[in-house]
Image 1 (cartoon, protein in one colour):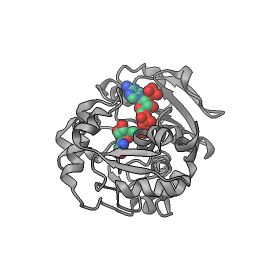
Image 2: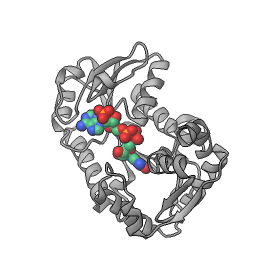
Image 3: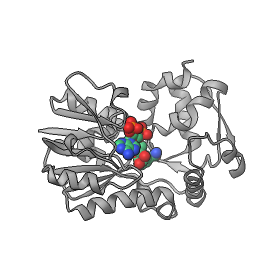
Length: 279
Ligand SMILES: NC(=O)c1ccc[n+]([C@@H]2O[C@H](COP(=O)([O-])OP(=O)(O)OC[C@H]3O[C@@H](n4cnc5c(N)ncnc54)[C@H](OP(=O)(O)O)[C@@H]3O)[C@@H](O)[C@H]2O)c1
């Protein structure tokens, strides 16, 4: 059986490919630019834009890990159906249903992919992971390396960082066993903490102090990198503002699905130390 992993260059997709390959599964890893894909030995690398698919990439595929791409996925799902794909695991986001965020651009984009999947009639499982630990690299690594400080608009906003290995482990299981099909699974990290505390844990893990500067909405928006869409950032600020001090939801689904407690943010940060310290 072949597992097709879309977004194999992505943080989660990359870990998933490695995990499936290490488990002896036949993996087809895809990226929009296959030449840029560094797949482990034995893994087949193919080019695939999910919004403009070549049906040939689905030949012999039994299960698919699907990224919540922006754009229509109906042709891909039709091709998957025609190729006899048995099951898909969709990476989605709680933005799809959470108050405030569901009505914004992130929520709507995820809802669109979920709706297409539902309407396709294909068997699927939807994953709703909480705040990705990798957000710390995306949002803060550059500033920490350059200045040892981070600017945050809502440092009291509580998040529940999830280790991406936990998501990859759950996905690998669902792609290779006939379990939890037709379900939606909320996956969270083990602990809710304010973003200020996330930074403190990061500082402990890398062995260097990190100062937190509380920013106004305008200041935070002015610092936004060019690649980050402003409406998406505005929606995140709305979410953080509305949440106040409310703890983020925590559940034990990672443990129920993997047999071990959810990995800590600290463990993730220690493994990713170089991202925050190396030149
Ligand atoms: N940030 C959070 O806290 C959070 C929380 C819950 C859920 N999520 C979800 O998790 C995602 C981030 O996961 P990540 O960090 O693993 O992602 P990532 O590293 O940013 O990678 C995204 C992947 O999506 C692929 N992709 C995008 N458009 C595509 C298309 N049209 N066809 C095929 N592949 C396409 C990219 O493929 P290429 O290599 O071809 O570019 C890339 O590999 C978010 O987008 C969100 O949906 C995020």
